[in-house]
Length: 288
Image 1 (cartoon, helix red, strand yellow):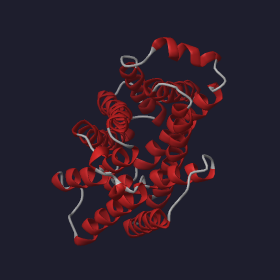
Image 2 (image 1 turned 135 degrees about the horizontal axis):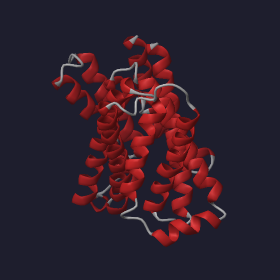
Image 3 (image 1 turned 30 degrees about the vertical axis):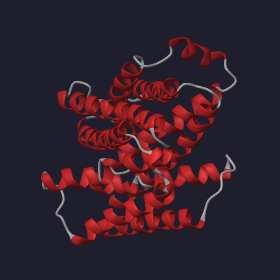
Image 4 (image 1 turned 90 degrees about the vertical axis):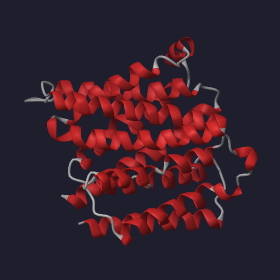
């Protein structure tokens, strides 16, 4: 089961990476970041609600623990989406991505504090290697002082903290009900929160826009299907391991940019990708 859980989480991260590329296409087409984030969550909500209705038997909706942890997970996902885009707006993609993917550090620190994990040199080395890989992949070392701002750094770290929050939220919600119930609650919270910063008129125009299929694909891959796999997988995986395996996401997003958006990939970035993938693979194998 641990091996299967790791594969499900890695597959979810793969879909997140692809959805990041789709979101990039929509943003480059002039769509507002809040609108893109809202549709990602809203289509995911429709996916989860449809699945919930079709399921038979107890769904766990009467369990207050399910509601508590699912709401926290929804807040975490909403914070992650919002702060990540704000970090990009006030800094750069490289800075935002690197700070957001500090999430494994936050998750390990919380896991150590709660005695869910025992600190060891191997785990600290794994954290360090993954962070080195992310820095090389995003080319953070090439960012000058002009690419850094206090708001950009602060919101990037908040995106990472939100990432950690939804990992723990989904982890502790999963045992109390069906994955469809967990996702329905979390995505409802996400959709309601993202209504506030969104341009309503632009959101309505999506329905008749030629990019509608991309919005649907973003919601299904980036929220509905990916989070379904994630909730099922994390039920039998430690939060710290899940956060490390999810580092497949930036690798996938980068490869999507190369294959679809005709972006170039330097040798140093390939080294960073290799470090991430090898470290995650080693952690996954030893965790069994």
